[in-house]
Length: 346
Ligand code: FAD
Image 1 (cartoon, rainbow, N blue to C red):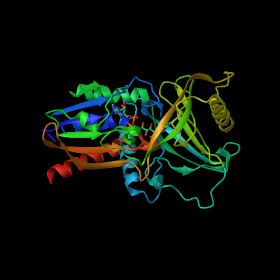
Image 2 (image 1 turned 30 degrees about the vertical axis):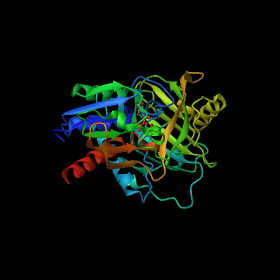
Image 3 (image 1 turned 135 degrees about the vertical axis):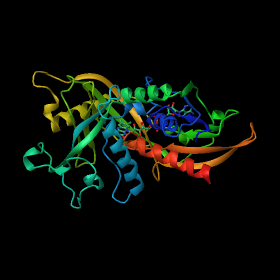
Image 4 (image 1 turned 180 degrees about the vertical axis):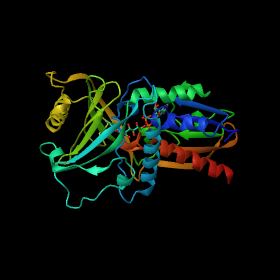
């Protein structure tokens, strides 16, 4: 894509990963990121800063495409872990089941993740029937988003803050390709209006612990269908969650929910609290809307004609990552690059 001029709509983890790879790997002549929100902004309309974020694949056994996205991303994060200013670190992941499902079988990533094994009985917290553990990845969202943005701009990428109502507004006289990484807004953005996109509201509590206190995360499936998790970050913050409420657009914090999250987390892992500390230090409450999509993430190309400039423009979509935007970010961006190259070559 050496001679292509590309506009990427979106500065979340999807847009910034794709934009960076377009310069780093494809040596595109010009990549310009346009977005209403950029790293450093906090808004309920901007999902990426609110993620946990850890790698815990959601791909089912028959979701081969999603497995590939997650596999590529795991290997990528493993390689860059501990790179200064990346916010990416290797952790021990513990997955717990309050009740062991009758039909349990090992997940697809049993052979991917380092040190995968079942937990021994004596390693299970109170109230947990079964568990697995493996080496995984924790990503500090704000650090990693800034790392991506800095990498992108240091490679010559440019940015512009704008709130667009139609995808066509990205197109300038010299634009060849538009990459649409608009997250939840793909539902309403003119030129896309994908009615399969819907939010899954997630509420979190960010606590502050001494740095390096935690290098492990847990994710527990409660018998009533709820999930409880704690994910450490490289700066000592720990994200506690969670909720998963489909079609709920509210970004207001519910303090009863926050109290319930803290209670469930401490009930599962009392050692979240350092011995000499009487209570958790709450740094922030937050709510994010996971950009879900019926049928899964959309990584697809299509042609459009710009009436204004009288030329054909290639559109590449990369949105609808749901609760997997970080853990599949590198894989979906690579896939977007691949299909763009294929269609341009044909
Ligand atoms: P966003 O981050 O929402 O970015 C969209 C971008 O597009 C923004 O820059 C926005 O300004 C721009 N944009 C959109 N429309 C317009 C427009 N019309 N004009 C201008 N700009 C526009 N994922 C994981 O992998 N692991 C986790 O542990 C994890 N935990 C999570 C926990 C919670 C509580 C939540 C809410 C999510 C979690 N996720 C996790 C999911 C992850 O956060 C999302 O999948 C990911 O952030 C989506 O990124 P995105 O770039 O597609 O969208």
